[in-house]
Length: 206
Length: 206
DNA sequence: GCTCATTTCGGAGCGTAGTCCGTATGTTAG
DNA sequence: CTAACATACGGACTACGCTCCGAAATGAGC
Image: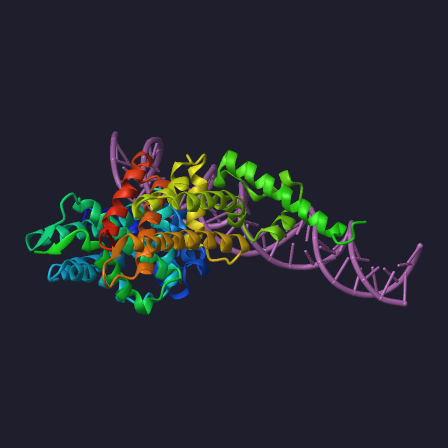
């Protein structure tokens, strides 16, 4: 036998994969609220008790699959931001993946946002989601930092704080769209104007 | 008999009051998650079926009692904002009641915020809560408008949009505190610095 | 191969939000 | 006053997320 990985570990990985696949398929096709944990357990061919040994809650199951998408979007955004030619454009490029993706099921995105903000459990998937969010906020900070070479920073302004202000505003605007208020068609323009107003008091071209 | 109000209407008003009192006492003392709808029904001396004829859901019961507090805070804030001598000070005065109140039970405030943002039902109490939120956002708009006489508006800036940017940021910061991230002790200072950065690009003293 | 310890499994069971429908109560007409 | 109707009531019931614990599977020691 390949010794290092016993049957037990393989079984575990196997179940993990089946659960992920079942959750992804059902949530994507039917939306969070229409899916029961029983359906996921049945489809993954495990008992409900087992299901909750692999994720602390139904919400964690959703975060598990959403984190994957988020991971790709974040990576893509950070790469694209590097070639932005102004702070505003770089920030817009950073967020573009989150915006352009037409969320197949907006409900899932809304629940994801809701759990990130208001979830109380400290499960592994929520922890990962929070890390992704921080990553975006830090990326905005890095962008602002990068442009200090070509722009002047208004005296007395703290760039980290400004990054948080910026991110808060954009985050809230994304939430507005996901919960059905706020028009997805004008989202890009709205975000851009928010950023413009914000950065005017922070960075100005030399 | 006083004719205009039949026994039926009085019974209804009576139950409404008992339910409100029961919900307020229990939520305030024990916090949202520790209270069951059964407890509220028992204390109000109605059946659970009856309870849900007076509010669409447990969350609506919470909003029912939180709206009252919010109504007072909003009124107070708007009055205080009128005598602010700068845009920043006026906005800080507007929000002061939301900040200074030491939330006896932060959980309730967090749930209130969560339901306002992410609730899906269209019950009467959520509708009222949304109206309160709009009221605050509009109040910020009014403040900015008021100061156009003593400050110049940066060309190209839309004051309504700026009000929303401002409110989004402050709203998010309040949420951060309610969910346990963000330090309540530095909240006022944090909010002020957010507002300062934001308004720099919007209104400047003539 | 056999025994024992440890980890994993899974479905019966629990708590709770919310519904359904038969019953009770108030209202109106004659 | 009575009958017929309309509305409100409430508790048994359902659905669903999640837990608990006995059973089963795996690995270790000999």
